[in-house]
Image 1 (tube, rainbow, N blue to C red):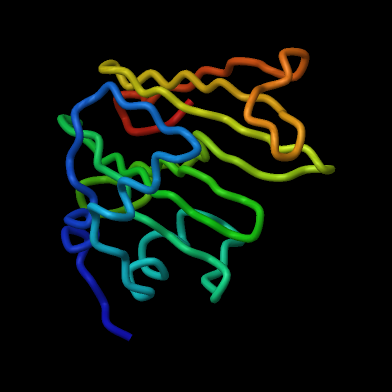
Image 2: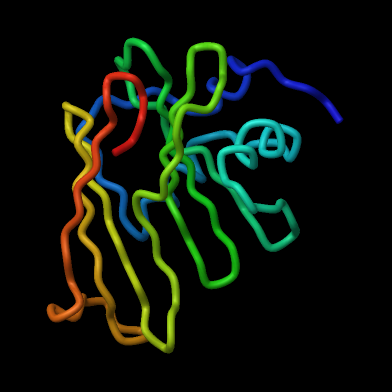
Length: 161
């Protein structure tokens, strides 16, 4: 299997200036505009960031973007699709390619005949606002009784809190 250097991996993620919003359909644009990741890159850089993840014929990864203008770390967003589960991951790395942190920041999945959806907005200060909730299967609107908002941020050292 071919080994890559970290800059090869980062080059698959075009830099994007914040703010940006990630929703259920956003990955389509990234899938058309960005080159796919090789299995070797996924195994070398993404799977270590996702403990327990496996690369199989039912899993797809799409590189989305790099957060532009980070000084002491590299922040990358990718989309992962498995059976009935779609997730946006935010991974932060040192300049040498060592993993700092990795979190799911938005997703869509089916639970008990209901669809759980979350969308994420990342602003210029690297603050992440996540709106989430359930809708009935096939429904497109959140059930207001299950909706909530969570907050995260990327700290100066690259940790996601």
